[in-house]
Image 1: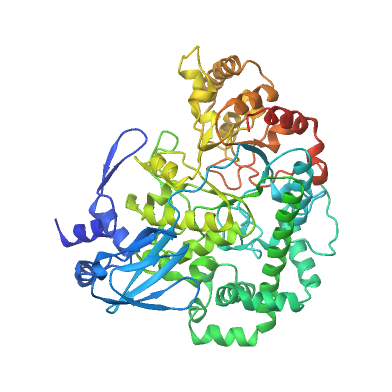
Image 2: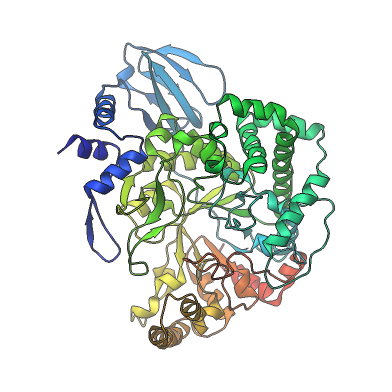
Length: 619
């Protein structure tokens, strides 16, 4: 084995993988070198130096997971002096192997010049009660052509809570790119630890013409202009800003720089690309008012989203908001600018070839580096989770398969490769923050699932996802089929998702028609697909005992899954889905409006019927 192969293995680059079609892909030298470069290793001398660093002996491993509030003994510390830096509280000094019981949190332990991280987590999160909820498009909740706000979300939550729903779900509300009217996908955020300001409700804003679709080119600049006019810092903002500390200041500074030099930091003057540079510090001093404005928008977003959660719980919801954590961040956004050492360069997160994408997928998202993440004690992941869970009791982690391994796709021609992630540490951090918030975590475990991941999620008390469209019970030929036996207990179960056809759209094969429209499928293949869909619809409707939405929801309610979710698109009888994967501008992704006043959603007949059906579940 060459030094480069050895280093790749040591950094977690897998030597091969089996794709969804059962084909084995070997790691090529070109892919290996591209992945090493993404880790910041280019020359043979750098390879040698990195191997020497990895091979050096340590007293303790860089990190380890320990049980919170349980006596801890580390034999390696016997007859050694140590210093503990707890997540909260004063440093402690001691000697010997017994550290006592550590509270919940991420703690640093220093011994003889080394630093190790102790991830003090509960062994397992408690099982949530049986509950149900509704997902809604936050961007499409406004009464007219404006972008939906956190105030609209609050109104929808109050209405659905009064109807008996336990939670209301939305796509990610991470900070985006307010100066780019075309960058509105919630799954390509600028910063996952900060909030989207385009959903902030301004005190005064001109109405916009209502249409079936949100027009971001018109609505986003109008929203930002109204927010700028409405901004008036007060004592509450100043206290909150001081509490938030340097992370907020760096984000707000990035936003101010974006307003001056353009949306994406790689296009800025070189001196402005270094967040620690003198030029950036001088800019912050000279443009303090602009930095304050962007910090103030975060305060407004934080307060409004907190108000929405409080209103949801007051309306009787068990969980309130059901938020979503995107799998990655935009490589040219605030998160990657502020902490560049955390992210791999020259590669994107993606997926290997499968039956739906023969060439694989590149998502245009910056991967977290497992080495630098571990060296920082996984605190960047902790901060992102804590931010989301400060506003919600239910959180979905998109593509939680990335806690086990992430598929890195190099720029150019080299094929992609899987990089192993520190699963046990990342799950421990999720348990720490969920336990701290009294929340439930849902991991989206769909796709090419690594062996052992679902068992690890179950052991952690993290729910999985079950999507009826993917379960395909009609193909199994089981005349004695029972959803109570086929669906997992530790799961959130749904008919579909934002990336899949609605109930009516699936029955009509609407996404097949769209694939023809965007050029992914020819007419002959579409005819065959429609014939197959017709047979699938007949078989599934026979399985669930009917063709109506109530029949579908009764089927979902019969599953043992702890959580069941309905989609507003289905409750409104819509044919079109929110997002068509693999498209950007060919399909109106993330633009379809609900066209129902937010405060009336819970009064829809379909919602009332669904509430009765779900209310009959054994709680």
